[in-house]
Image 1 (cartoon, rainbow, N blue to C red):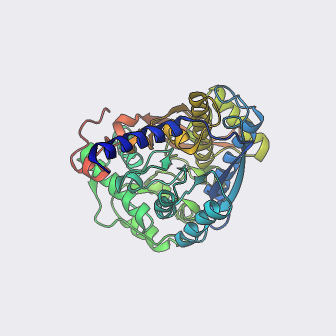
Image 2 (image 1 turned 60 degrees about the vertical axis):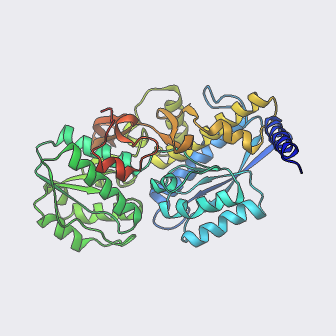
Image 3 (image 1 turned 180 degrees about the vertical axis):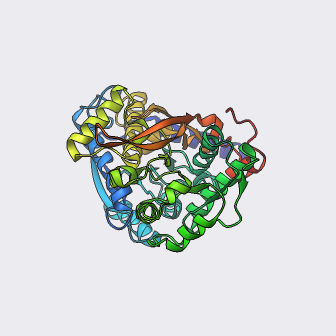
Length: 434
């Protein structure tokens, strides 16, 4: 083919492809979505089951058109969402196999899920290979987008850099005269990275508060922490950072509490709030607690129509308050709903996957706890405020509470586009608007 004819053919092909992407897809009565969360094992109680419940509640309400505005039209672009719930337990190899099964055998239109960073980092390349829209609601590793852009993968919650920076800011605001800090974190990527981000943020934000040379890294799901509790108790650092989650958080609290640990140390938990409700009066007062965003205990009393609906209907259906993962999974469902409706309006019919992805990219939407913006990762990574509070107990209601709650804005705690969290923290957080 002559060069000019080849150029003309390429232009025509591109124009035809663009035109096809702009056309609506065949109308659907049902949109099948795989929902992956821990339904068994030590992470199910504090994380997986609350996530399942948050997704289930909101899917049922949207299908019936019963959510408050702007989500009060029935369905997703008019289609009923049909969830297929899958257990995240069993390891990364199993999750990759389960993902392929959902897409290649069960024919789902999209996948929403993954709490563990190991799971999301294993599944994301497969999602790109199979060209399937995948929304991550919880997994916190910044590597998800720092190791390469994604076309089909989105994350609707912030990552661990924001958790660590917000914790260091809370230390500055509430415990600025503390001489030193240490930590106990699980010995795998999530725990090691979480402490590293907090440690680097402390160097910039609280340079006079020194790091211990003996932070503890027990193995994941260790369950027994007697040796680590003794070591931390002997350490002179009064502040103890932890990114413990799942059953390890509850086990540590129960074992440390009987030894008076929380009367000696200020414990800073970046995402242990699920344990506060589950342990009730057994959870110590005075612990610095985070929820990785405007979720759970920290926003329980926030009086907005969306939050009131979520808290009241969740309690009515499940007999308990929604926890952080409940909010995070529900937040992903809202993102899919608003993107599909937006895409349907743009094309004048039921949207195809490419049109839904276009609508999700750079999306901003109101969630139950606050407003979310997809401003990082090429418009695929969400940012939002992250806050901390201090645990207490309301004798009148017989319920746990959080006092001294402070949220820090996204442009203060997250690295800018094009810079990794480590690069930004090691440079002293340039451009942070705190």
